[in-house]
Image (cartoon, rainbow over all chains, first blue to last red; front, side, top):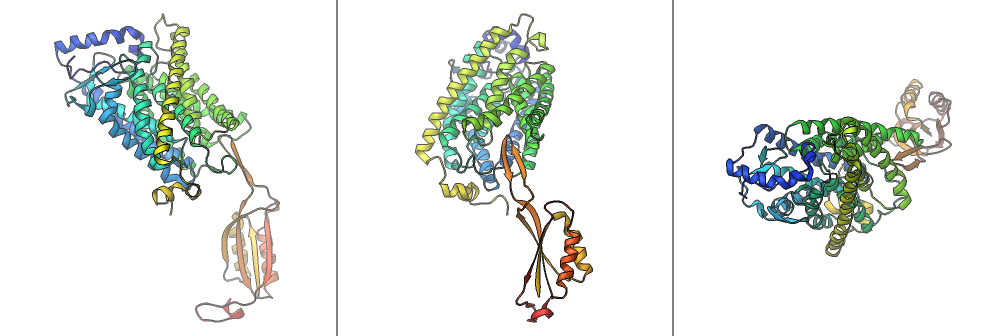
Length: 447
Length: 112
C-alpha cells in the first residue's frame, strides 16, 4: 500500500454502516485500486469542515470543559481543575504525534493495537486519509481531529479526581493511561481490523472510546484515590454555576464538531449528526429538569446543564446512526437514568465521583451505546437497512460496552498505581484543606 | 453615648438609611453579615446533594449617637426595617465609653 493511502481507519458512519463488515473488508482492496489509478485529492470543502470540526472539539476542552468542571469545584480548587485539564490536554497532543497516532491508526496492527507512523513518519501535506466514501481528507487534518479526541477523553477523567489529586500525579497518569487504555480502545473501535470495528459495533462519534472509557476510568480512579476530606458530610457546593453554564454552552456548540465532524465529510451523514445533536440534547435538558420536579426538587440550572451533557453523551454513538425522533427519545431516557445515577446511586455506594464523570459520561455513554443498537432500526426512523435486526446488533453493542468496561478498568488501575508509586497521588491534608490552587500552583483564582 | 446596632433584612437598608437621615444621624457603618434566629435558612440541592444553609444573609447597621437621640433612632429603625415577617431582625443598644475623631483628636459627643 502506498504511503499516501492509509488503511481504512475510520468510524462507522450511517452510510458506511449500512454496508457493515463487508465494507471494512473490501475497502483496503479498493484503496489499492484507487492508488494505482490516481492519487486522490482532498475536496477543499470536506477539508475545511474537518478543520473546523477539529477546532470545535478543541473548544470543548479549553475553555468548555475547563469552565464546566471549574465552576463545579470549590473556588479554592478552580485553577487546579482548569490547569490539570489544560496540561493533560497539551500532554495528550504531544503524545499523539509521537506515538499515539501510530498506536491507534498505524499502518500495521492486529485486533487490539496498531504500530508504525511514530513521530508521524511518512506523513506529508499531500498525504490523505480515507473517509467512508471515495473521498479523502488531508491526513494531517485527520491526525489533528483524532488528537483532540484523545485530549478531551483524558480531560473528562479529571472530573472524578479533582480537588485532591496531585498535579504531578495527573502528569504521570496521563501518558500511561493514554497508552494502555485510550489508544488501544480507539484502535479497536475506529481502525480497520480493530476488534469492535470488525464486530460491526455502531459507534458514530466515540460513545465507547470517549465516554464509556472516560466514565469507567473516572470511577476506578476516584475509588482508588479515595474521597475528598469531609465528603459527603461537609457541604461542597459548586462555586460558580454561572461558569458551569458558560462551559455547558461551549461544550454543546463544540459537540457539533465532535459528532457531525465524525462523518469525516461535509455530507448528509454530518447533517443527520448535526440535527440529532440539537434535538437529543434539548430533550435531555428538559427531561432532567422534569425529573427533578417529579422528585420534589426545583428545576435547576445545574439540572439543565447536567441534562445537556447527558444528552450529548448519549447521542454521541447515535449521532449519524439514528433518526431525529429516535435521538429525542434516547436523549430523554439517558437523562433520566443519569439523574438516578448521580442523585441516588452515588450516595448509595458512597464513592466520591466529584463532578460525576462516571455518573454522566459513563452511565450516559452506556445508555447511548446500547440505545444506538435500537434507534438504528429503520422502523424507528434510523438509517439502518431494511434487513437490520435489532437483537443481534444489541448483542454486539453490549459486547463492545462490556469489553470497554473491562479494558479501561484494568488499564486505569495500572496507570493510577504507577502514578501513586511515583508521586504519592494525593496532596497532603493541609494542601487539600487550603485548596490545590495555592498548594499546587501558588496562585488564587480570585483576588 | 449609645451604640445602636441593628441587624436587618438586606432589602431594608435604603429605608433604614433614609429614616436615620431624617432624624439627623450623620454617619453609620454597614456590614454584610450572616446569622440565624427564628427564620429558617434555605435548602440548596446540587445533583441530589442537599445542603441546608442555616445562616441567612443580613445587614448590620451601627450608629453611635448621644443619649438623648438614642430612643428616637431606635424607634425609626424599628419602623423602617419592619416588614411584619419572621427574620426582620433585632436592634441592640449599648453604652459607649468614649469616641475619638482621628483627624482632630476631639473626644466625646463632639467627635460624633
